[in-house]
Image (cartoon, rainbow, N blue to C red):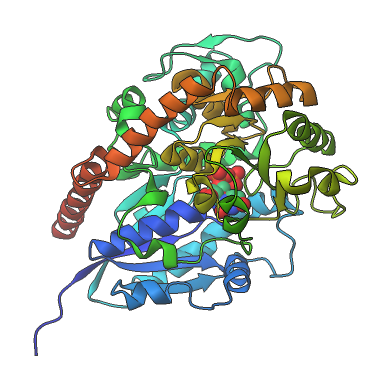
Amino acid sequence: MAERQHKLQAIMISVPFQGHINPFVNLALKLASKGCAITFVHLQHIHQKLSKAHNSDDLFSEARGSGLDIRYTTISDGLPLEFDRDLHAEEYWVHLFREFPAIVDDFVGTAIEADPYLVPFLVADTVYAWPAAVAEKYKLVNVSLWTEPALVFSLVYHEHLLKERGHIPCKDDQVQEINYVPGVESISTNDLMSYLSETDDILLETLSAAFKGVKKADFILHNIVHELESKTLSALNKYQLNYAIGPINFYKNLAANTISKSLVSESECAPWLASKPPGSVLYVSFGSIAQTSKHVIEEIAYGLLLSEVKFIWVVRAGIVSFDDDTNVLPEGFEDMIKDKGLIIPWCNQITVLSDPAVGGFLTHCGWNSTIESMWCGVPMICYPITYDQPTNRKLVVDNWKIGISLCDGKSVNRKEVAENIKSCMSGTCSKSLRQEAKKVKDILQNALEVDGSSDRNFDQFFNDLKAKINDTATSE
Ligand code: UDP
């Protein structure tokens, strides 16, 4: 009988949010397609949502059927399943930061003992604070996946510089240009991430801890292409090994489409879109977590009506608040729009953005949404709400010129909303937005072609990873 070969094993524990799950699952598939065994872990409450939305208990069965070695399992995050994590989002985040690391530590200790023919390494989301300690304890090579732009990474990475110059906390009333962060030419304090505005923000506290750990990671993977953030990435490479391997949500020849990632059942939009002329429909969605006010929803609703543009609007549960499930749209709105609009709770966003009828995306600028729009060549109307979204808006509007802001100031009013929708879809700036969006689309799509920049970077990363694991094994 042939001797069983040793095989690399990626241990991957997902962050329990849609925008982190999507690229993480695709990265798992990509590593599996390179011959790694994957131990993929979802938290139990995420597994419960996925099973319900997709009517399936084994989310990777089809991928396994196509020959990939993916061992799927779940762990508890330490809270009862009934605990409402959406309603108590901040409390939950604190729990993940403080209590979850001990659970992961135990899990990884057991996982690496399970099969002596596997050579384990860790692939973890950069926002988790536990990977450095776990990797050190079990002597694992540590790969960190950053799911936002390199600009945002760089700003958190150089948090100490921002603190020294008095830009954390950044004061709302003093707009200043920041031009001292390596690899970042210039950024206004207005465009910084929301969590930099206060020193005692829990997200900043957890990200600071996570980034202390990431400075010890062996490899950092970025969900972007090198060409679009080359200066920032080159500057980061002076400290550590960074690889731009995006856009991860569009990896080719993977069983990706057979994997259930959406936490909510998807409404079908294709029949509605089928009768609409090319480029005529605006897609509106604010991602999976961000919340806004009823007033803003109302202004956007009337702005859409005034613009007379056709639209699909994802009005998801919790968009205004989780403890108030009454209809957030103006009364009678669905009757007013007639066939002009389709209102749905959730959809397959990539399928919608890929539809030729879609010509614009009114987005909160979550990074996945942004890069999905870029991949499809769809210009954006940006309404950043929180977290990294204001910084992503700057890249879209100021650097790449593939989008416009929804409103100039902080307040949202229906007249300005309508004007900007018209201007993006068919007005004066529509043509140049579309030209630039096409250029960016080509850059992204070329990057994933054989020998494109992200394809090469992934191969380089994988070779460096194998070499590092060999070195670690021989030095023990
Ligand atoms: N998404 C989706 N259907 C929807 C709305 C969003 O599939 O109706 C997906 C979208 O494709 C993206 C993710 O949810 O991959 C949202 O991630 P993003 O980083 O844009 O925003 P977040 O939810 O993290 O704020």
